[in-house]
Length: 450
Ligand SMILES: *[C@@H]1O[C@H](CO)[C@@H](O)[C@H](O)[C@H]1NC(C)=O
Ligand SMILES: *[C@@H]1O[C@H](CO)[C@@H](O)[C@H](O)[C@H]1NC(C)=O
Image (cartoon, rainbow, N blue to C red; front, side, top):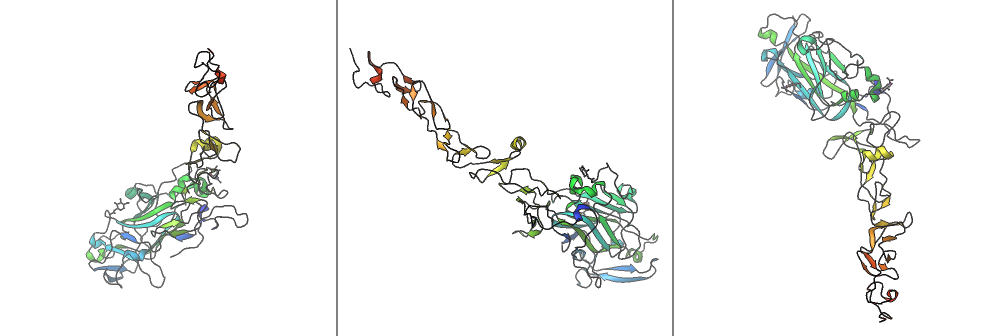
């Protein structure tokens, strides 16, 4: 059953907008998918179901169990089966359908237990788990959850008329400030044998937890309400104090549930207003604010200027693009750069001979004559230059006796450019060096005066 009823409690359920951008200001804002029954039509895996082979069960219609009517559970008969599909199908008051276990006659009773497991297919932030029993409610049962699909099963809530004995938990409905808020509680409020049918159990994930009204500021409770899988473990049947367990009496006791609902929002961390099926038919958030991932849990590539964050009521915390001055479309988040400058986007593979975290400067051995212009190679002469880097005008640093923008010529009075620079030594006795070729030292005219 779809559920759009506003439910009590905290920021999961305050009036949130489904628009990820404000209509008027065009500024990004926190947005969330609507509240739904995440269990609707989700297949449930039951470790025990009646009807294979067909078996008899009985119903007590008076509180004392005096009046009985008996029926057959037959897995192959469409009118007499009680398979797990009935747990999450559409419910009508007029035509109740339910899942049912085997009876105590088949050994269904503590310490053997039955698990009903739902794989939601996606992380949800949930407010409630609701069960509607068709049999009497159990004496002891527990709800477990997974926070991640590959994570462990975590106790979520215990219901028992014998909390200490069965689960080793005190019977208490709340957590005191300062205590671990991620612990399952145990209560006996739903463990009575009456009513014999139609009893509800409503587990509120946040009720009795001190930070429930400050969920935005409580990473512990955000984690606590995050659920990918739910498991109901039925541990002990209520048996009305029956002493004589003959086969007639044993057929009176079994578990039967007509509906399991898991009420919550598809978890998108405030960055999506709906969840959609992706190309592999997997439920994923329809991410905005430059985020991506199944839960909008990372920044899109090139939006790494600041760390990913959840949206809050006053700040969408959208991911911001890197500034690469148009020279790159790739960047990564650099924490040290972020600490130093407030901008963490570090560009990769800068084009056009540029470099630096923002592709803001020329690569080594390149220069830019005027801002906005392309970076040009220094082309410093490898023999005549002190190093390969030029200044911002493109001028290279020359070795002794060497001249020229690129240090490729000897100064007047010097000749023979080598790794040591240009030589001032005459090549021939009495040669007048100024008249010799600056590069070769070869003298053309007036060279030899002897
Ligand atoms: C039932 O669930 C409990 C709690 O997660 C687990 O320890 C147990 O192994 C499960 N039993 C079966 C048969 O799956
Ligand atoms: C919410 O939690 C924050 C951080 O723990 C705290 O500073 C703030 O006072 C809390 N607000 C309320 C209303 O409790």
